[in-house]
Length: 135
Image (cartoon, rainbow, N blue to C red; front, side, top):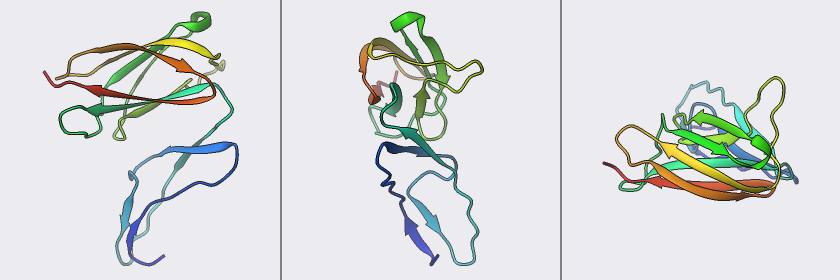
């Protein structure tokens, strides 16, 4: 590919591009640079939740935030955001953990921010954005 700035879109029906591992998108490609990119794709038809955590003051991603989702059928999982500021529920575990449609409780905490508590209605692939207020 030629040097430049790139973003990737995903056009496979029934699936959504939910993120990438390093580097974050969009990304820049320099001359003679090799770049390995791992894309994270999820089914649009599976009950699941993407939680995106942002700094309310700056709009920047909050890495290291702990998101806890609990409620329907004893579902109770906590995940920590990475550089992208997001997490995907249900996590990949053995044995597998699944979500059912319904209303879940969502709690998010991060150092230097006020805690967040609310609810989210999950039905197929659902996105929730949480904007944390700095302390």
